[in-house]
Image (cartoon, rainbow, N blue to C red; front, side, top):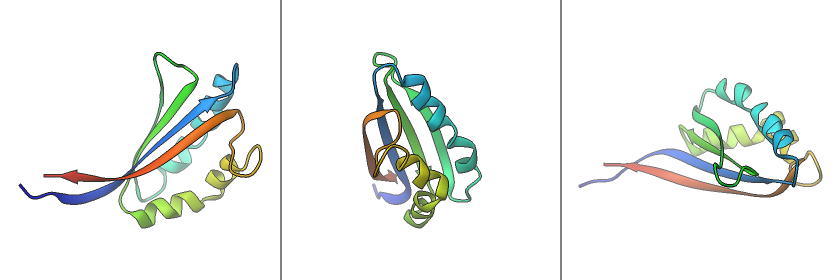
Length: 105
């Protein structure tokens, strides 16, 4: 079996401040449409944890690291992350973003 490197996958998990879940969802949802217009975007979906509704997660897939880097540099992404101070989005208690390579066989 040979593994072939394919796209870049991003998992971005945001934890809303108490009582601010809907505001965070609204802010995140505003990123969906412009991101879907980006040429390198394969998948960009917003999810809410069933057991912990304050946890909101993006599952993303990009053609390459280059197209992901172009996405990260977009003004609407930069504005989102700088919304409530340096690199902390508005209505967010905490967040983690991890980057992965997808392998298919």
